[in-house]
Amino acid sequence: MTYLIVKWLHILSSTVLFGTGIGSAFWMFVANRSRNLPAIVFACRTVVLADWLFTTPAVIFQPLSGLYMVHAAGIQLTAPWLIAALVLYVFAGLCWLPVVWIQIEMKRLAEAALKDDQPLPALYWTYDRWWIGLGCLAFPAVVVIFWLMVFMPG
Image 1 (cartoon, rainbow, N blue to C red):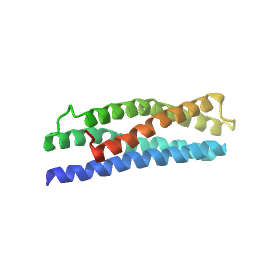
Image 2 (cartoon, rainbow, N blue to C red):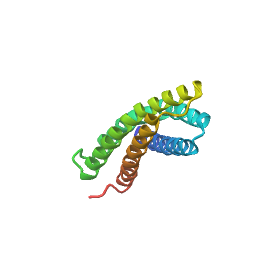
Image 3 (cartoon, rainbow, N blue to C red):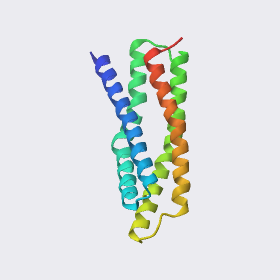
């Protein structure tokens, strides 16, 4: 019974992780393309908050619950599909960590521009390009992790 509860929580947290990520990316991308400063500030604030409330706990819970299930199911840590999933998880995490910092900086820059009634500085748009690029790297990695978790090939 414990295994099934952990499995359910693992699936639920992966859904929260993926859903928050894609939802945050959508809203921030759309707000930035609108060039509407109040909308950008709102999106930046909300995305940063969502990362702290939803993404961070899920990022921590995922490997803990996954390793518990691997151990409980007697799966070898050297299984190729598991190694690939872990490598991709670390890769996605290495993309996400700078994104967290970038989002906080984008929020700071957007709030300052709104407060001072100024346009967004060029640095904001540099961060935007990095934010998009890192997201474009992390997203397919997470999709492949989902595939590996379901099919456990090899």
